[in-house]
Length: 319
Image (cartoon, rainbow, N blue to C red; front, side):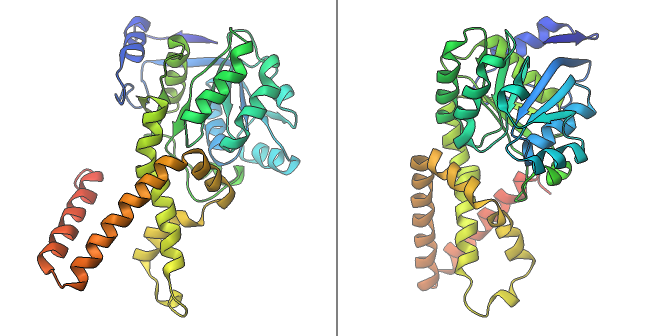
């Protein structure tokens, strides 16, 4: 892997990437002034997010070759049709052969086995990352697999994009540009690899933030994982004959409940303790609100709703 530099001084960018503290927004959108060049980019698991990564990388010409790894021929054909890859293979080792940058794009439960199958085929000095929604277990497992290759490094990533859809055919609708991507720094993280992974996501137009793997799982349990379960519970709370009366608000609040149940079960299993903790906190909050409603404590209900409305508007920049 090498970087083709334009006017921007590489030492300045390296300093920003390597010294940013946890949670820092370390890369500006688009990273104007340079472009990254990868020899072979291998995406092992070209689904919704993996497909979006391939489409964006090819559009921005970040790699001379983008090769996908697949479990089914139908997915390979679909990825070729939408322009997510230049070519593909059903064998992880074949897809990753000679790759100097690898993105794991399957469900998190498969990362360890897929990386183990591809490990010996990677080019010397290769960097591996992923798109998984949990990080502590993923980082531990992938670093364990790569222990046999001291010339290959893993850095966990989580691009906060996507939708309730699945598969490469829906990848063109995913907007990576302007979205946040978390990359993880742990005690054994190789700093040069961290810089390369950060620059990769930045080159795709994403805003990169650095968190520790455990901190990532703690924050995302509340910001992403728990809300998915709450949305599913909302859907199941609709009584018989009530579905015909749901409207825009209900659809907006429950859209994510239509996501891939198998994928989300894997996420819940991988971050079970944190998600359970957040669910109990949420349940306690609902109990408080139910009590105010039962006791007709109007001022408490009003204050609760007003605070939530203000907080929600602030998330959209005050819109």
